[in-house]
Length: 294
Image (tube, rainbow, N blue to C red; front, side, top):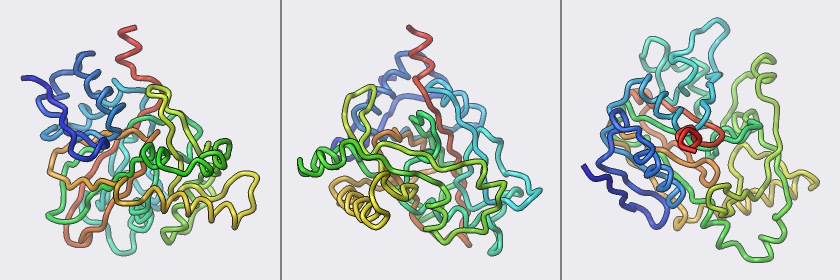
């Protein structure tokens, strides 16, 4: 079957059909996916009936796997998923809906804030792969923002102003914005704040984009109030409707996005009634298939 790449949002999101990544991980097929990500930033592959092992192996073709700490658990409480998988769900370790008092419920509230995966880690995070194993009948979309087009449309004076600025990113900042949980010292020690450039140049395409979102707490060298005001101004600019797309999930969709040029968030659903089981893998560094072909 011929692989087709069809845009579904203005120069931003594409649908890839005719490719089953369980069966075809040839350099040619993987190259189609990465080239589509270079052009569109977000791609949707429907009907990818993946097991955990298959999702992990597919992700590893595109870079070095990152590992999930899956914070928010009580001391001694087991994670629901293996550490290669980030648990983006409302489920507990027995796969039932999280109880009202479960601290993981509050932890995951921050997923509803605009963010970029692992911008709070000092690593070259590239692609995220989100597999929709169980989707609710309504709600629970994933919204995306195109940070390339938003940067392109900034006034030239603003581009000059932010060209060399850096921002502090911390997962604890975003969790606090979402209402927070009682963070334990052992949790905080695992992920100290890091500094990221406010403007990033994509190494494959050369396009510039802004690095913003809820993990960004302040701008280096600028007073806290001024820095937060600038971050808020830039974020509001990037969240204009013309830069956004909302993905409505169908079960077994696989959505892949490039964290170097997007923000995203989850949207609410009736999470005390319906189960939502989403499993994410995230990679860093250059694609392994490209390295193997070189």
